[in-house]
Image 1 (tube, one colour):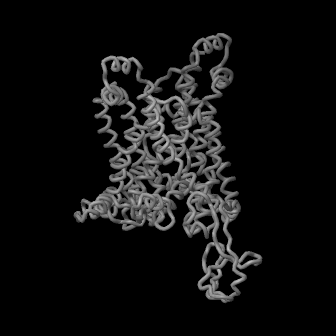
Image 2 (cartoon, chains in turn green, red; image 1 turned 30 degrees about the vertical axis):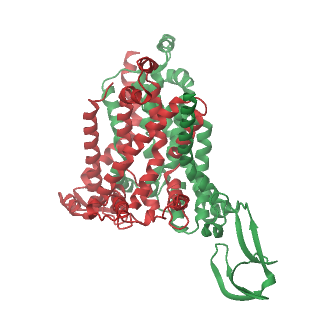
Image 3 (cartoon, chains in turn green, red; image 1 turned 120 degrees about the horizontal axis):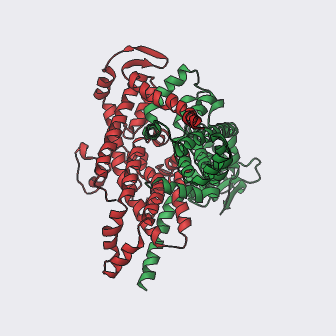
Length: 328
Length: 310
């Protein structure tokens, strides 16, 4: 009896906190589906409804706000789609005023509008291009380095590994200024290679790979060695085929990382056609700050690919994250 | 066979090493060098010794951004640690729906900082935001959130008719809004790490305590807390370092670190000096000051680690 009461209490706390964690996302989606006029009025919170007056039979629809209704004729303001007054004090026949009330009114068009307002298609394409080329480089350099660290004995291996580890500890803001100067000298500013090549080493991936490569049974390598297999042959024929799950996990992490990266592409690119998604979104935030519903729509579709990836690979993501906190 | 083993390891490491040296080590050394130069966007105006540092330490804007960042860390780190530990302990007690809760808590961590900053900016909007609608439900006064420069202690005590001196005002409500959002963003990660730490604690301890008649609360303080302390140490270090680097929130949610510079954080300060006014040398000096702060804290926490129960 006491334990079931305790259990209920635990679930209530967890659900309450769960709501706090997801409410921003739910509100984001519901606002993205609202008409701007309705959002500005602030009457509907989570369910987009509509409640306004219009001139009956007008096409395109002419929204109005009634200033003074008296008998046959009324004074009204004309409004645009964003609930802003376009023409003031217009006298019309009262019979022409029509009240519209829709308890649920979803404006899917906001997504299309936001998508076309700035070249989001281009930003998506750029981000995919940069993310995948970065991933490719990360996988190659990390697999090679991790293979040497995991399976070979050589002078200075510990010192080199320490160098790798210590580089992760240095935060990006420390070297962003000098990286800009360096890329300027290389004439890599505002180029795709400036966004890709500096991120071809990913120490976290080296770490992840090394841990896995170390766990492979020694017998496999001994047998291959007797058969005259070269070290590269072993990497290709033994290590990599046995590492598919860890490669998949590392890929997901690297993709999330480059999809969400912001400061570097913000600083290193200049021309609008080279903007990555996050940078494009931040410019959109500055330009369209009053168009709340479109901002929410853009935020929604910009996180959608990562959300899908997360739901597909959540088990691997969460379990690998859990491992990063463990000492070994 | 033997000789090949001698050369090849370095060949395998070479690609990663070259990139690491070129794009991490060299820039880190460079930022140290640049900080002694008058360096603008496209070149140097000559060696000026410690002038950048002297100018930095005389700049009230630098100290304000440092102080704001310290407030951020002071609030975010303990809040994140306490809440994530509570979540993890509760999650560890249940079986049904554990996976679902884990996923939900983790969601903010994988979504982009830019997108969620935009969402939270709108949540904290004075007129139409969700935060004030929430307060309204509980009959509380609407707040100005990101537009409020007054300190939160100042606001709290003025509710009782007490006027606090300025230096006791605490972080502005605008910064506090950013604190709330930052805790929300990182909570899931810490919860997952804690959950893994808790699952490493052997059940025997709890069974023995149960036999000895120790209550749940006593078990938490006498068993869980000491045995999970290595995780606490890791989470403390990571959260501190990450929180010092907060940037996107300020860039997207505030008007250039306002109101009255109360949300200007140190990384945003470095960013504006480097890329708005193009004082690269000066910005590098500020970046190194941040680096020293982070290194010092890491060192102190490393010393603290010796007291951690393994």
